[in-house]
Image (tube, rainbow, N blue to C red; front, top):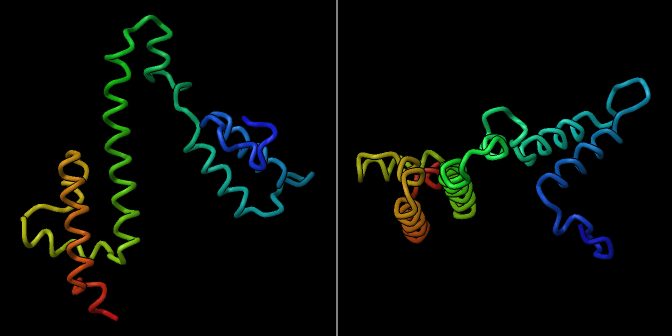
Length: 149
């Protein structure tokens, strides 16, 4: 972490961010064990859990490498999984930014016979196709969610 930056967490690792969120949630806990802001504590704890590297679980790549497994075969599948998750996450950000909802994806299904989400998860080409489709739907402006307004 950068100590003299206005935001000391700006370059924190996921592990450091997770630990900081756990500490913040703990600070919301009162002496009798209840939370001053239970919603905030739950949000902080859920976020901390998602950010925390999962290498402490048995069977995770980091544990297998520590036990002398080869790095590439252990971490390459994780890389592929993380790329897929990132495409999914960014796809949802793009649809939201463009003003589309899941109901709008029916038009893609009608055109192609495949769910748009499947294309996103399938490959980078599928992700690019989905973004192109979102842009076209936004340009045309006659998607299902807008017709409801």
